[in-house]
Length: 200
Image (cartoon, rainbow, N blue to C red; front, side, top):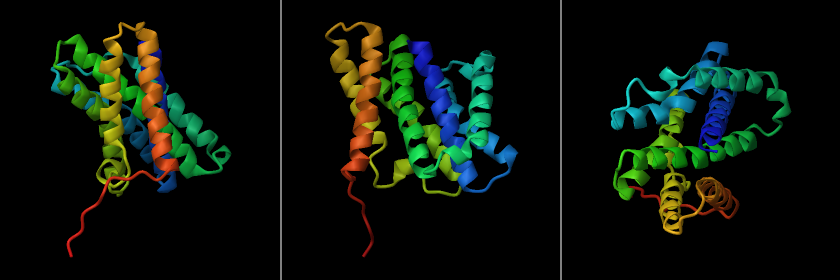
């Protein structure tokens, strides 16, 4: 289940990056690069911070193949995504839920404190999107009023609460991912925002 979620998250973020690049009218190389850095950016930061080098995607070409396939799929079927913004949002949300979980688990595996694990999970989920938005000349979503990183933190708290009940790992992973995805969808649907500050 853990490996499957990792692949799903990689596909989702690669698709998110490719769709963003196409919305900016980038060429084929630009689309691939944005898809790639979106998919591996958070995981790369995580692995460097915990001293796991070479980073994960350099040791397993499966991730490179998956990103390539996801990128090609996004390009070939771009006309099927009638509402580009909706498709981008859905893929980004799935990646957010899955990669938060992966960061949490990596932190637990090396014995980090739960608070640090939650921070690691949040970075894993958000940093790829930060790189994507910066390269596409956008203010990163994480820095806007839209609830984004906060949901990853909430997911991390839920994860550790459920872990105390000794749930089956597969059920724990699935529930945590669904909580993050569901709250992100509800936040957008019901327009839940963090307050913003302006100089007057």
